[in-house]
Length: 393
Image (tube, rainbow, N blue to C red):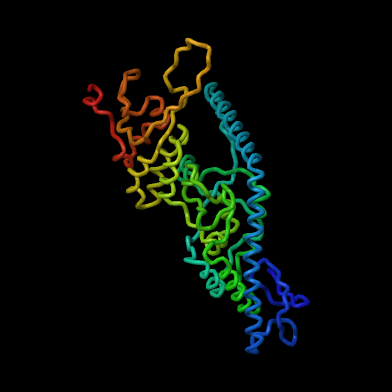
């Protein structure tokens, strides 16, 4: 806990992880700040508010520095993701090989699976931060950087879909951001709680129209523009999402200080309209949606809007073969499909190899999605089994 220095260190804390040295007027014992004398109270309170303004400016400056370092080291994180995908591909090939040979080998993987169990209480404005200090909420901030405990679903697939694995080690920028944000997770100042309240008041008065910055996976942004992970929504390319492990280590900062909202279905729909999903991500989305609907009541009504927003591309292995009449290489054409154009899927008894209308899932894609997923009750308004009359026409 930060201390007040009036020439020498006093017993008065600031309520933040920040020390403050200032020409404040102390009591006779020089162990506390004088708030009894009316004139000295006015002087000390004003000076503490100025100190709170400087604390906010220091936070802005340091987060800006972290943001620049984050952008500079983007290539390093990208290379880590590439190497991680390569490891997963090799492990998958090894598992498939062991399965074919009758082995019982399984991929052993460990990672920080995350949970989002915060209380969703977000201050309506920065002035809520000052009242938060005054109320004296009990701090729940851990004293060391931690990983997030695993939350299990009904099976391994549900667990991974609702809690996407994120096992990338914390970068130096993320560690610095966590330490910085935890320093501004306020606790009631002691022995006089007025000190923390005046500091918080000055902090709130500085840049009142802008929420404090946070570090997301896309860089440093304002708290109101960032989003907190929520039941697997973060896996589908929504911008400005705070990593779950970063949020877990500074919950109070993200919720009470920066006012970061959680991801919601509207964020996902807006993001999907701006991107084209790869086939693997489309399959993940279709497997995730029924599980998400079961735990988040009321989102099912957004189903049709979600379907209309999805565009996806098929793998080149599923595209029709081209005649190689010339040796000149032509640029590969990626076929982009709209999910809203898909109205049917074939049942298990439908013979292989027969032509299908364009409004039906291709056999290869349907096999990867899974019959059980397509038949889920949450997709009753999305598509149905291909009727014989439609096929014959």
